[in-house]
Length: 611
Image 1 (cartoon, rainbow, N blue to C red):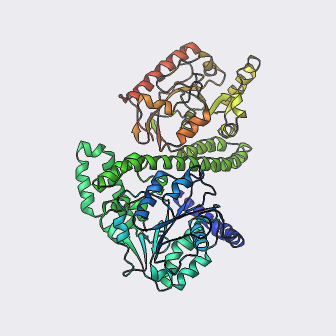
Image 2: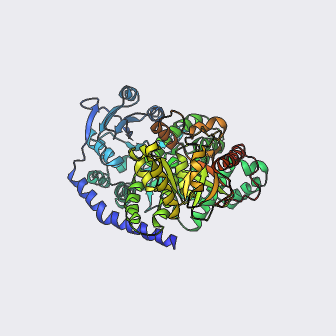
Image 3: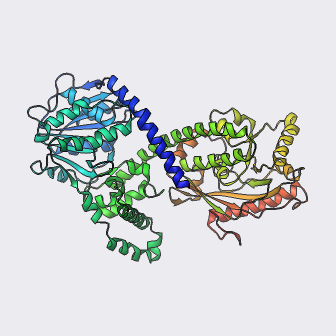
């Protein structure tokens, strides 16, 4: 049922996109001028040789990474004249001077039309192809590399065997050469199909349209015009490398203790299983993201940046990918995997940050609309949706939960937990059906206050004049059957200890609602697939005089995070003589459990993982 519902929603969204949004975007593309160059160097005529590379670039800050300069340097050393075409609208200070050392020309244009809009604009601006032009390579910055010397690859471009070369090919949507590197020989450059295609390119502000119409369409248009297209790395040859013998070999290694715990070994096996499953279902794979290891084994010089976004290792992190690459290529000369890993990790962090911020915003806007309706209706829909909302936020942030023990099924229950980070709200909100208590000023924080209200947070000021009223509000919530999540430390710790509990927080346990009480211990134990050590915990913990915004942005750049939540035995009303006894007993239990989880010691007897 859930799979069918997901399919139906995706189908509906696709119809809306292609029936409403795409036609409007196409209309906008036809109205807007395709010529958006705002700065050109050198001014006037540009001298170009017979072999030209149109190198497309985008960076929101106008920065040019050192890795791109290395890529262009290798192209230049192999006899190509490079035209750097940036869709950034600007270049960072000093970037133009660095580019002048590698490039024959630099064009800066507004971010209109994506890659194909930039390439078409450059062809028009420079008057390409010219009478003496023998080759034009269309390249972009969507890859990291070259990890290996590029000269061998360029020498394989034989235009007597094929008019157009790509590095890889794909059958997704329709057969096409992947557009991060397309090389056109002399016959293709003078064909009517070439001029017709590029003259028809419009700056349509819709990536899906660009992919279907231009990235897939260019190969189809060239073939329809009688030109031959070929890939240096054949899709079928890559698939043949993923045979049963390789899987059997990995399975034998799994039998050893080292094999079971080696992250590179695990990565390789998971990748092979995914490829074989896709091939069995006759599902077209993307060579650069699904067959990246097979490509590297055969001397492919690049890693696609989309690997960082799609995270095929399920949280393993880019540095592990670099180690896996180094092992798979056998350390060939010229492969700077250390530099690749560092550069890729920085870029991947920015991609994750921007994507997560955008997704949290969209998810929150959707949730506001739904929760506004549910709050006005009777029943537990609003409480269920609050938990559903936190689960969505956790998934966007890359937060995984490991739940140990049995969560209390009694209503109302007072869940008493330790507290070290703002992430506790997301983790416990997703795992526990309850409301939080927060300081009144949080309600006025931009964005954060709105999110807190979505989770049905109860705001308290802690002023003496309002204590009695706020106490009645909390007791009323309990009497209505709401669970409450309580942080009796009153503030956040550094994650390496549990701070003393304040007994005043336990007044609720002895109120008229007579709630059950359950101790809950939360510890963050994995970051980017690696076990967290003592010195790593400040990366997650938000405490002291830390500013929230920098801490939040720094953590959102990380790949994945795991929180372990341990539920203690639920305690019925009357389990403690008074609030001081409750405070002391629960503080001792949670402190011991937190220490055990941090140190990886044996968990309390009878605990069982529930998720």
